[in-house]
Picture 1 (cartoon, rainbow, N blue to C red):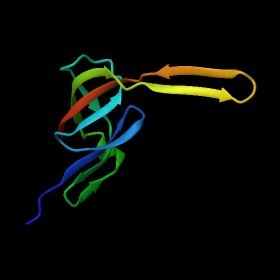
Picture 2: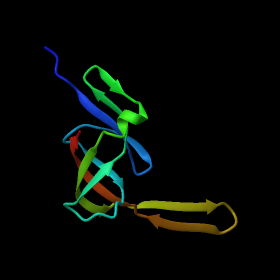
Picture 3: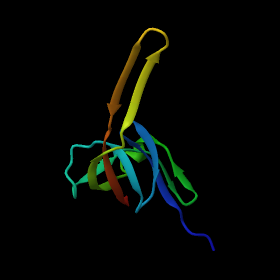
Length: 106
């Protein structure tokens, strides 16, 4: 007895992510408040043994996700140093991120 596996490859914030219903993914900041929904464009759909990659059929596929929270990622410290010249530079960066939960693939 085999179970039917349904997942999609979506474009999300400049990346491609493999998602199925119930998955949590992290994207670059999306201008939607927590509790709102977004729609992610599908690039590939796998429904059991059937694989759909045709752009005409994928235009009908809707991958919706609910925004769980907007937050900032961990601090990344960038340090530059050149020996014997007295040059050193320190800079920090924190990415603005959004955590979403995939609610449906239709």
